Image (cartoon, rainbow, N blue to C red):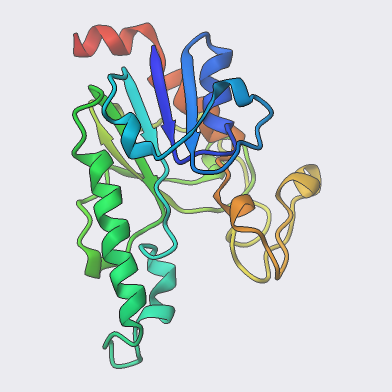
Length: 215
């Protein structure tokens, strides 16, 4: 399959699909950090929606859409305290919806944290956590799916530590170097897809039977 992983510089999902023999490409405005620039397209992901793909998995920026950012946007009486941030949230919603409404691929998945209600994103298809796929962390993630089955848990483990992104986050010994987050935590680190989830996406959405189902 020809697979586009939009807004991904880590190449975690791209590499998982490549390992199964798919023609997968990551795309982002930044250079990739996954070690395979030959599989990375440095461009505006919306430009690639002008091409045809078998599957698109998009990770649009969540900074201004995530429910966790409500404290930055609203006063205690629920009035907007930062109009510029609200405008950026509206722009982020438009970008998000470009993937949801795209006809560039028969199968589409869009990933983001739980969104702010004020931006009225469509209902998500499911919620997943890294600990459902063998990585002992908590990171509540929503998936919006088109012509794709919900991801089935592959290896449920006991999560060790608090939510990813928490200032009191405690690193798991086995993955300390890879996922340790500090008070100066990097946005790239927080945004990386956990390997168990990436592998599940490739195995469950990248099979030949998926193409037969939508043919």
